[in-house]
Image (cartoon, rainbow, N blue to C red):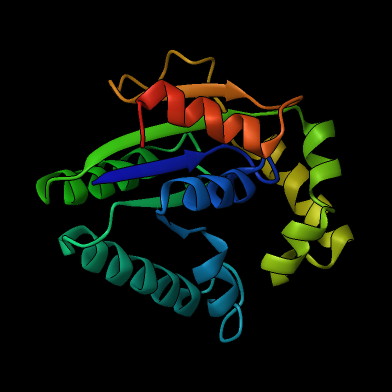
Length: 188
């Protein structure tokens, strides 16, 4: 059983690559907006209620999936702020949960420059699957704010995991990126 964490800044292509991987590998995809957009129906981003519900949904899914023996694989997407220790701890907690239950944990870091991501922020697939991104002006503003405020990519040397891959997918299709991931980790 394989766990794939797809990380990178907003609109880098995590969900779209995850969709291609899920289809090719028969894995289940849980992109971070599955819980975010549901929770936004009840509370605004950053409110205590938002954090409790969003994280509660994620923890229930993680625990249930980690303990399941019928799934071949699971993909989760996450914007990881590498300059925040709490984000490192969060990823480590997920990793421990899955590895304790016999899963192999993989990290894929996707990179594309901000100009590319601003263009991808408006794609039909993104807007169909992420209701909170449909206000393009607000979504672009949030993307730029996060870009200025956090380190969401590394130079490829910060993550010391054995099962780690960094891909610059600026000029790659989601299909090509997914194929590189499959080949690199020897996934079937």
